Length: 249
Picture (cartoon, one colour):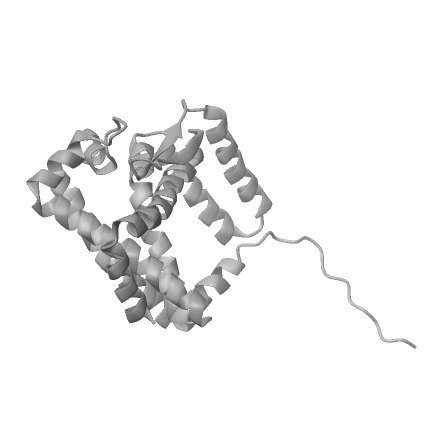
């Protein structure tokens, strides 16, 4: 089924009008990644799609610190709620510290920029996991097609960005709406590297996505379920003992 879906994705990529429509869906996933991460770090954000030029843009407003304060309060509540469970408290505390390290430094800006392309890979990875599960013929074929389309498109994009000076020039010139592109900002404003380096990293991530999805599926019994069982212990400590029934008579 994955082979059929990949072959279908290749054919659709060659048909410009149809590929344009599928790219709009991928663009929505991309911009939603920016938007969700933006909200997490205090920036009200709305994903939008450009139906004329293709692609999209996330409209982002000025940072609202009260949103970050709510996130900190949530971590504080979780640490209190899980009192009596040191393991869970340590876990939520560590996540809270990690969030603070991002929220209070420029690392959150890197996360917001990277989250668009990361959302694409997470979307493709989830679809591939469902393909490996093989639940339903039509649904499996649709998932295989979408996953293959996203990964092939991202592989083509990263390869051209690595090897084609013309592609890099057009990309670094910005979008048709005048916005600088994600990898250009990451490379120039934050990481101080050539955009080709970001493209290489992204290409490797694209190649690893199906591998990771398969490994998660393959070892779900040996690793995933024990991990979920471990996480299930992250529940609040209940004071008192449960009542027990007594037999009649």
